[in-house]
Structure formats: C-alpha cells, structure tokens
Image 1 (cartoon, rainbow, N blue to C red):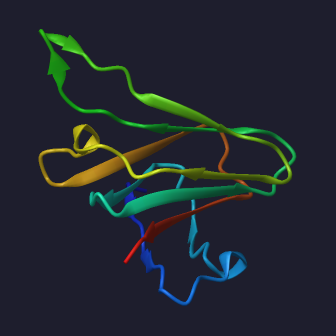
Image 2: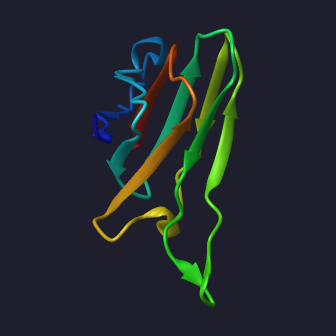
Length: 115
C-alpha cells in the first residue's frame, strides 16, 4: 500500500455534526492532505490501545533536521483536535504527511476546513 490522500470536510457556517465528520480511516502506510492555513485535523480512536500519530515537518534549520511532531490519541474514547498547522509542515508538493506508529485499528481522521 501507499500513503493515501485524505478527504477534506468543509465546516459550514451553520455548524458541523462531528459524529459524521470522520470520513477517513487511518492508513497504516500514512496519509496526506493539501496544506491550508484553514485546515485542522481531528483524530478519533475507538480501539483499546492508545495510538501515536506523527506529523512530519520537512526541512532543516542551520543544517539540522526539524523534529517531527507526535500526538498521542488516547484509547477507547480518544478524540483529539489539532489546530491549523503552520506553513513549516508543508512539503515541496504542498502536502502535509501524517504517519502512524503501530496498528491503526479503530483510528479515524478528518481534515476540517473552516470557512
């Protein structure tokens, strides 16, 4: 398998039913989405074990790699919202890469775009 692109869900001004806003299952080989300053990530974990989600930060500072940003999604009822990411997370092709450590069973992800 390969990294897969995520569907972007627009958040209407009338509001969004969050229970229906998780259109993507996490892909064990990683996911990607086109960066925008209006996009945020939501991860939900229904599995009995916590999950680690890592968002890559490409590039270097003074020749040193920038450390990627890990997030822990708690077990069973973990529901984590990540605010919009700075442009530093954007790769040369305009996408942000998301990686997963271990099993992705029960892990879903949404890219939410604000108006």
